[in-house]
Length: 147
Image 1 (cartoon, rainbow, N blue to C red):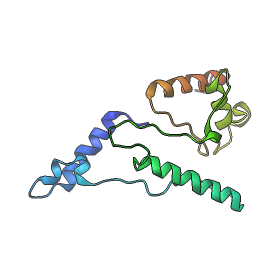
Image 2 (image 1 turned 60 degrees about the horizontal axis):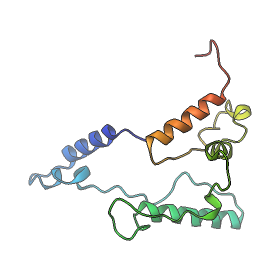
Image 3 (image 1 turned 60 degrees about the vertical axis):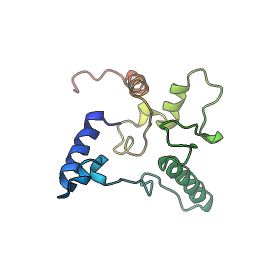
């Protein structure tokens, strides 16, 4: 997640960089340059054909959403059908289940060099991000003198 001021600063910078003599690109968002996700670089696969196919399908689904093809019109809102295998069903505490799924045995693994680089939780709103962060931080034992 990035703060809205980061996007505004990027927008102003790109408008300045790409402004033409006519000044038309200074009126366009991001100076008229459209940044498009064409490949999900974080997805990794094994060599097993089933895993490769599953990853390919998931990557295409992400691209489909990123290109705003999931809804009928581009109104800023869309209903997106989440695949059944990605849903957390019948849970008393879905956030804890999500944390355990993404960060298995976190207390045993958090000191591993790439443990957090290999996984992430994305959330649509800052209040959800803050709740997940608070839950994660509450799992760690106090580290006196290590700060």
